[in-house]
Length: 329
Length: 280
Image (tube, rainbow over all chains, first blue to last red; front, side, top):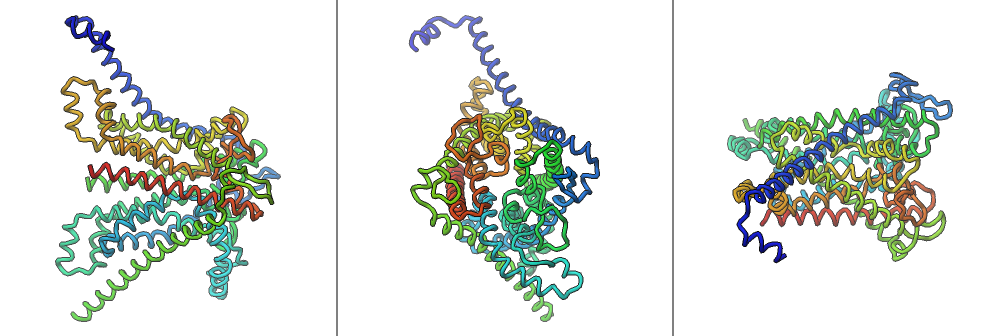
């Protein structure tokens, strides 16, 4: 160390060595800048690569079936006839069930947390919800398979069948034996899974309402519900929709929680008690067993469809959340 | 007037009652899941779980090889994903804060953050497994790294943006080059937050199953070879839970408990770290 440091101190730095040192620093700066920029571009390349590889992988299937792939219900590995309608249908129906339950519940919980919850309880409940949002989905799946599905088979499903059996239109919705597993069960599990997401996002969004607005409403004599209904919700509408769509994106793409309880049956039945399948469950169940290029390619094409659907939903969600962030910030 | 007042009061009471009920139902439901998990998981917990290999059907055994496999995959994924994530986040917060590129990357990154993980598995299958001709632990690690990157990018950017500008200005006024300011000043100021991001990404990938199903596959035997299929906890849980053997199902519960405890411990540590940062 000393012998390096000494000459620099004793001999006055010549302008050339100074320029060299500056050059080195400048080079280091430029190199680091380029490095970080490359990493940022990597993120873009990643998304591009995902899309390109999925399109490339699904080309054989798309060439063989064309757009028919989207509307064909049959899925027959033996005759190599594949259609994506049943998985798409299953994905949409389970997500709709999940959102129909999780959105009202999540919003009501968020209202409770921001308006009515005692202050000392807000932090613990908020943290608990955020921790729950981090629980891996396979945990929900295994619980659904061993605990929830048998429970539904014995209680809710027979109840639904007997209650709605005589009703004309609804009877077909709840037709057939109670299997336990099936589209309804998958939807309910998904609902539990996305509930923490929706709750924590809507809570954050509700918290972004300026207190002055709420206080003014309370000041003219509004009830809590009226404040929520006419001040909080209109102010945060965009953000809430964004949060809901983010939850929807999760629900659409969720694999493990669904695969356990959906039953993996490639058919479209009117009854939501019947087993069905979703895009992600089909891929998870069949990909490693798929023989033949066409089979594999059809599964990748399913993945592409899923990616496109979730991309659109997530992009819309981010756009909406960005709008509310801009308003707050 | 009184009638209207009573109606408004009633409506308010109904709505608030509903919101309380929703909270009780929602939290109760989630507590129920965790309760079952703890009960079933602790029932099967023993020393053998950590010292023995996964058993053939009908025999006793443990989860040693999937636990080790998961650790290897996670460490590798973090080693691959974190540098890219941190550098990208650095660009977005420091060099290109007002760039079009940054705006675009942020948008894409947020989408990657919640993109379906099974699609990541398909992607890695296409670019690594298919060309190599076989499943491998390395492919599994890369698949997980793809999930790590967006988490780290997001937290790094957020944390660097929180670093007060006077710090940068002070360092720059001493003649420090930009790269050195970032590495010596900004990184140091944002260290806790960036570490939080890495921990969160570990929590995120330790339970990921879908991207491993057709990249790392599974291995019933002891194997540390990254060029061969490798066992991992989530995949073993998936396989064992869907099997008809009660021994396997029990191990699946225990595995689920281990993952959950690990994830909770990681998230709590991450929160604690983030809290110390905001207080100081």
